[in-house]
Amino acid sequence: MAVEESKKRKGGLKETFFLIALGVGVALLLQAFVVRSFSIPSESMENTLRIGDRVSVNKLHGASERGDIVVFRGWNNEDTIKRVIAVGGDKVACCDAKKRVTVNGIPLDEDYLFPDDYPSGEEFSYTVPKGRLWLMGDHRSASVDSRSHVREASNWISEDQVIGRAWAIYWPLSHATILSRPEIFDKVR
Image 1 (cartoon, rainbow, N blue to C red):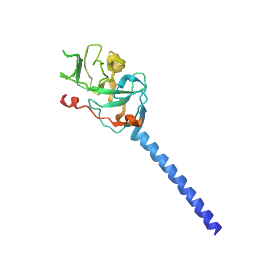
Image 2: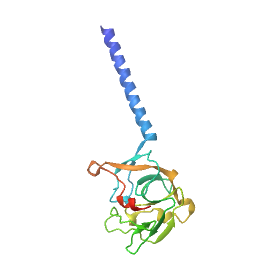
Image 3: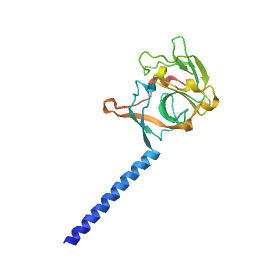
Image 4: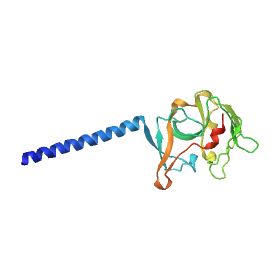
């Protein structure tokens, strides 16, 4: 009887180790190909995202759309998070008579901007090259974004540099929410 009990224990331990290894393997595969966690390092996306927030990033997001919040390999070769304002072929400009950013002539009423912040501290007008993105933080006065980098053609962020679309804040729990694309981008054609 002691031999049977010993075999059961060994079999149970093998099964436990197998299940743990399988779980770790699945988690690693998911992280490598499907989802990723990203910690917010700066105030450039406040109040949408706060310093220290943890977001879940969908790596199977497809093409970036106007309004998406994306993590990308940024200008300093670091992972960066910003909002897509315009995509390849769009004309992005600032500012109209009401001091709003426009995309293809359509003014954006950006209610997600940091309170009392402005859409841009500088005027600009660019046509986004095909396959590239115009990215800006939601806290514009604290964001180093496309406005600071596009003067050199090599500094335009490519779709290929996008790691994924942020779809949820999961930590801290008090700030947990699903991140959705603002409706203001629906009218831009």
